[in-house]
Image (cartoon, rainbow, N blue to C red; front, side, top):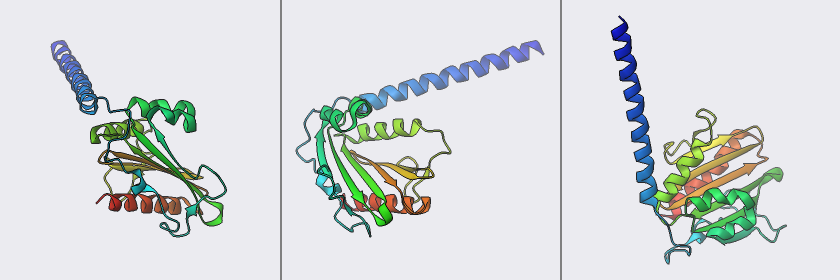
Length: 199
């Protein structure tokens, strides 16, 4: 009986070790695939594809009360608008970022980040790491996309949608919507517009 326990324990230990090694190697492959991107946007970079027009999402317009309603940033200059939070994106080799601020019905607000990571592998790794920061169950599927492509993190007062399509990565924060379901619907509409713009 003791031998059986030891053998089972050893087998379990070996399985855990194999799992850890496989996970480590998978991480290396992802990083290697991402590599290092240039510090200037690729010649074909076109973040204007992801600039929302007024009422492209019904009832939402660009916030004209601020001078930074739409801005674009290059790699490390991203430290200016988001300070220390930029480290995560820079570490994943972000190349170019646009940030757009929108206002909607009843004082709701939305901030849309569109990021070009230069390579699909980099955008995917950024997305995976962002999702890993949350506990499974706190985020939900977008509905139209698998969890490997997009997820929504709903809270009482806001909704954060995160997605990646090819080399582009998106974060859409909706605050002050009448309900969580409405906030999710708004973010979902934005993602569908971006997906369509790329086709």
